[in-house]
Image (cartoon, rainbow, N blue to C red; front, side, top):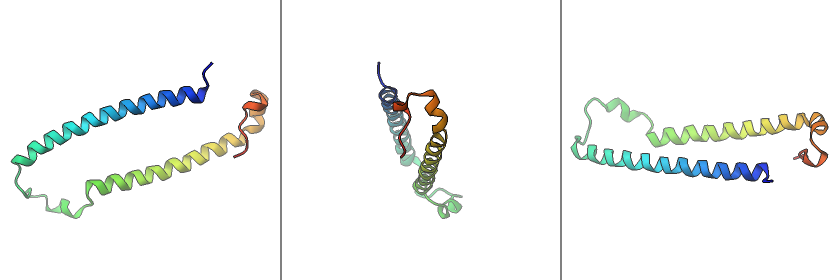
Length: 103
């Protein structure tokens, strides 16, 4: 019988691969549309001066994902600590060999 971790890793790899393929298609489509728009739009868009004072889209994305990475790291530590807190009960359910060792 396949291990849970091995099965989940194979499923996760497949999902990530599919998401990556969809992402690539979306980026290619956005690039094509933006290249066509770039050819017909004026060099400076009128009325967009206030936007120039805002962070760039790349800065927004970087800042957001930096936050998410920190949040996920914190939540991972929390979840592992909660799992550790249940070890006394877990030992009554799973065989001793299956209960996680102290990290």
